[in-house]
Every structure is written in structure tokens, then in C-alpha cells.
Amino acid sequence: MTFSLIGRCARTGRLGLGITTFSLAVGGRCEGVAANIGVCKTQAFPNRTNDPLGIKLLAEGLLPARVMEVFSANDSEHAYRQIAIMDRDGRIAAHTGPGCRGWAGHKEGTDCVAFGNGLVGPQVLEGLISGFLTRPEDPLELRLMRAIEGGRDAGGQGTVDAHKPERSAAIKVVDRLDYPDVDVRVDVHPTAVAELRRVLEEFKLYEEFYRQRALNPSQAIPQDVFVANLKSRRA
Amino acid sequence: MTYTILGRCARTGRLGIGIATFSITVGRYCHGVRAMTGVTVSQAFANETNNQLALRLLAQGFTAGSVLSHLKSNDPDFEYRQIGVIDRSGTAAAYTGPGTRGWSGHLAADNYVACGNGLVGPGVVEAIAAGFKAKPDADLEERLLMGIEAGRDAGGQGTTALHKPERSSALLVYSRYAYADIDLRVDLHATAVEELRRVYGEYKRYEGYYADRGRNPRGAMSQEAFMSKLQAAE
Image (tube, rainbow over all chains, first blue to last red; front, side, top):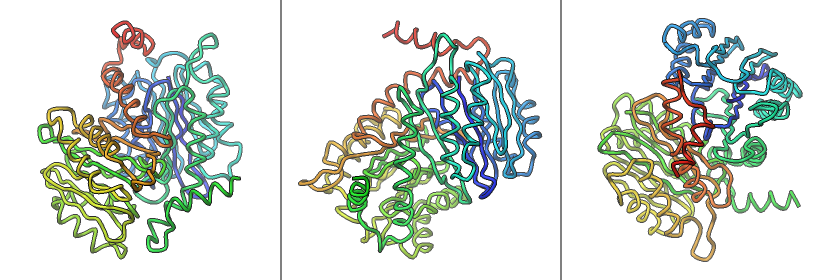
């Protein structure tokens, strides 16, 4: 069980993935997010070779729908996978194999695709998409955060009688460069979505400081001074 | 301020990073590992473009020392960087620029680089190297974690008068695949090294189950059933 949303910022072309699940350390299994290429995520019973392969195929110029055909032909257990793919132009392909357990499905929205399995029902996908669409002018990472929260608030994983907690969560966003722009994680936590919100908000406070420190080291203030300034601004 | 161990397992060729620092979400800056290619880190005032460039150079066959020369020639602020590189043969190279702050330094030898800046003293990198070398037969992830824990126990970051806590940490290991074997993070925590040990301990119990579930989905037991089995066995 897992629920995820792949999204694209139509303004900037930034691409990203927001994900949360009952399994531990899910962010360590999200390597299919590549700047200027696309996003590919395989979940449920994941074939770990799919996502790196999908990124290579998208980079070759294949359409998401064609990548999905290749996956199907390349995997004897395709029926047990749940996969969503988005390319740099926002084209989408999604697959929820009949072997996925619990309520499972996917749904496209404007600049996004929501997908999940082991969920309380289709309302979780609605929650993901409406969370993502709430404030389209916001940076993509905040939209992805709101998407995951929307999925959680719609009931998330498990059944109406037995809710499954989110124990890990991650948001990854790429811009133009070949390393992540935003990459925040919670690996083992009883309420991983709330904890991810805390980590993301803290990261956003430091993000520009870290960037400038690397670009202009001779002018950088020490982090202690930056942290003290942050504290006094909060007070 | 940060302290790090880059390591290679001489037996298996697996490559990895263990890292802890006062900065938050350090794992976001640790994308310099590629299976059967090499491992690199850029820290202190990190040039973020270094890691992917270094990996491409390693993939082309450049040695660790040669990669370091390339990074130097390509960066007007090279003296503010701290960099470690290990190539696929296990040759290691490292650099600590004079512009890095606090006590800074590195130890580089076959199959490892221990390095750090803003540390209480040279004892920290010596302890990291000793921790990494303590159990050469253990899995690389365990050895990397032991390196980081030894660095913490030797005083870690700050000064003797003013210790700086570890607020984030990460542990990454690649073997033969395009995806990581181990990729664990603590992004924001008061004692991030202890928390990384906890996350690692939890994850290790599930690791085989997660791998097998993906490879053999037919008849895979549910995660709840797996957890009940775990509990019964413990």
C-alpha cells in the first residue's frame, strides 16, 4: 500500500514526485526523477529495474505510453505492478495491475497523475489531486506536500475499519540541473506525512542559504549566525 | 561542518557513503555514488555540480586523483571545498581546501576516505577511519555506520568548548544495480546519528522482504503477515 502523485509545474517545467506509504524508507526507492526528462515510479510489488530503465527510454525520446508497453513486454510480473510515468511535456501513462492488493487505482488531473494501492477507496486519489490543485501558483514541492496531505486526509491506506499509518514519506523535485532541487525524506516515523511537512518547511528556510554558501563561499556567513538570525526572526 | 566516510568493499566492489552534519537534509547533497563506477562527495562550501561531473569522469575511466585535478581546474572557488573520490579500483583521493572553516582534514587510503570540517580535531577523522576498518568482514553499510558513530564518539563537530549536534545524516550503498542497495536518511533530528542507527536497524529487518516482494509478487505475504512473523521470531 502506497499513495503517490507525480506533478509538473506548467510555469517552470519542474518535475516531481510526492509519496507516502506503510513501508519503511520509501524515498530510497524513488530514483526515477530526472531533470528535463521525466518521472517514473513503480510501486505495489515494484520491479526495481523499471524506473532507471524508464528514465533512459524517456531520454531516448520514447513517449510514456510507449515506455509502458516496453515495461509490459519486459516483465513477466507486470500484472503485479503499479506504474505512473510523466514526461517533460506532461504526457502521462499509468498502469494498475490486477495483482495489486486492496483498493488500487490511478487518476489523471491537470499536470498530475495520482496513483495508489491498498487504499480506503478512490476518494484518496481525489484527495491527492485536489490537494495538488489547491494553489497552482505555489512552488511544486509545496503542491506535492499538499497532495500527500490531501490523500492522507481522505483516509489514506488500509480499510475504513483498519487504517494503516504512513511510516515513510518523500518529496523529490528536479529543475534544470542533474541533481535534485528539493529532496526531503522521512524514513521511519509513526506519522510520516506530518513529519515530512515539518522537514520541508525547515528545509525551505535553509534552502537559499545553502545554495548561496556553495556559490559564494568567500562571502558566506557561518551557519551558527544564520541559525541565530532565524531564531530571532521567529521570536 | 560535516564528517563523512566514503568506502568501498574490497570483497564485493560495493561502494557507499556515510555522512553526518549540523546542516539539515544532508542526504539531498549525496548523489555521488554510482554502481561499479565510483563514489564522491563535495562538502564544506560544496560545489553541487561536482558530484555528477566526477561520476561521469569516473565512468569514462579517469582515476580518483585525475578526477580531483579536473574538479580543481573547473572551479574558481576550489579552496573552499572539501572533496573525496574513490574509483572502482579502490584508489582514493581527497582534498581539503584552506578556505574550509574550523578544524578540517582528511585521511585517504585504499578503499576509503574519512574527511570532515568544523570538527573538534584530527581525532575525529582518525576515529572514523578506525571505525570503518574495525570489522572488514562486515557489510559495507555496517562499516560506514560504524565509521560515522566513531566520529561522533570522538567529539564530532564544533569545538571542545562548544559541541555542534548532528542534525542530519545519511547512509548509501550501491552494488551492481542502477538503484541503491541501501539508501537511508535522517533529515532533521536532534541526534541524527543515533536516529540513523535506529532507522538502519528497522530497515534491515524488512530489507529481504521488500526485495523478494518485488521479485516474486505471486503469493508474497502481506506486510502485516510479515510483521507478525517478525514479532513471533523475536
